[in-house]
Image 1 (cartoon, rainbow, N blue to C red):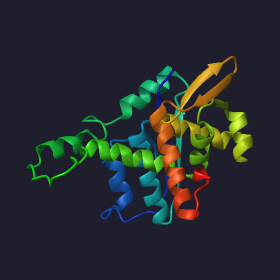
Image 2: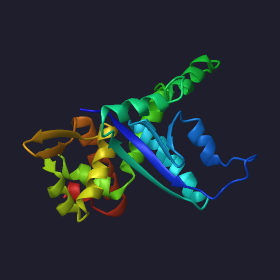
Image 3: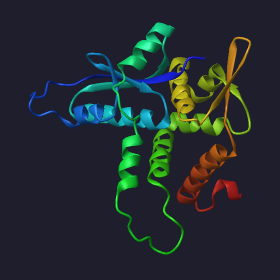
Image 4: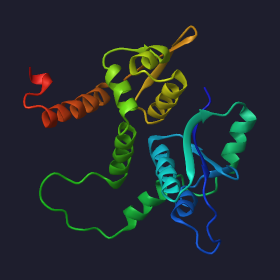
Length: 217
């Protein structure tokens, strides 16, 4: 199966050429493939989805329009063209890791060690993917079971194409798995860690909202 790409399409009011705004700096430092005048792409991972979603928020904050998608190239030729359009240099996140590795060491306070910067960055992107009501509902529904796009769309009362886009982002972040049976694709949780993450987030919410959390009744 062809690899997935995350794409950002955007429109932004023209900035003075001598004073590029924050969205342009974020896109240029993300190592994107500029596939059209207002369309950029990166290989889809939890990290790159988060980077382009952040760029989209910057664009909207400056009065523009932006949309993030996860998709596959339709042909091998398009796949090669996308790969060739990526600028040379380390992949997104590698430069930051190298910079951190060469930074002078600082004394650590006593207690549990601080996670590595790369681990914290990836965890933050996972939480960004969870910070959507529809995606969180989908993951909660998949606890201990597998469901098709149609079944999920009916349960969350959303159009199937919109649910497919959410599932594509979750799959890029390794938060769901997919399995084809005939013409139907079934989605599930990949492991107990994702199940525990979703369960703990929802149970923490119950502790905040209810005098007696429902999971304790």
